[in-house]
Image (cartoon, rainbow, N blue to C red):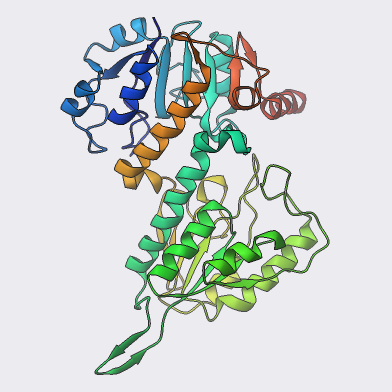
Length: 388
């Protein structure tokens, strides 16, 4: 019998859970048994009674949970305690599978260790962006949550009102918000800033998003270029140094009159492009706010500190790396639905069936049958070995 074990997340500050009660019911109908580690879900706002009502069983003994589970679920997978000992925090049984966000390009040696242990791993950030996989696209779901929370955080930090206000003391002009990058996070940031009444501008290297930006009520800042700025999968591509210098110049023109900047520009599997230099921050009005959603990938702002909020030249710069986790209830619901949709693709006659040739499953696989399945990870590991 397929046994799905939901592990309590050990990543610092993580409050989400990988499976919520409504998803438990769906998976038990497919013949799966659901075990949940004692304490998991409490910080996200889900009670033990809700889980048990939908068919889940709580297990206090961690070793028992590892012994009985076939498939393990987490929000963030922290495989190793450190890169020196390569000791696994969760000693998963050989032949088992684990699903979660794995940040494989940052923690690439974790992937190598999972392959050595014979564990099948599926990284939710690698779910391909194709029509069939939309229900499983956890990266887009979490990006949407991050875009929303970025604006809420900025509004709380800014020393101005967001909306136009007519008061007895006169008219208060709306805040000006610049969103850099009109992907999922950027579009949600635009929509949220507009709902709060701000005057919104959006910048993106991809002209194709202009219509989407304007449909949300923002003004599109264009960048005239002949370089291809988007992959076939919808991701921004890495560009030349001249391209980025031109991009910085366009952004710099707007910063002096901008109250809030939300940056979301990232390159899949690479360092985020540097778009806001220290000199550009210094030119901004004191009291302005930058929320850098690319902080974990190096940051779009030169002065961003990953995981922290700092103030430089009177400008508040937020580099928090887990904004979806701060919305743990709804973020857990969204993530759980994504994971459940992926599992529904793989559960056949009550058992887990991994098909590496399947477009969705194959694209999400990191390790399987003792091998590293993702080509990008293999290439990076080969490069590391050549450099050594």
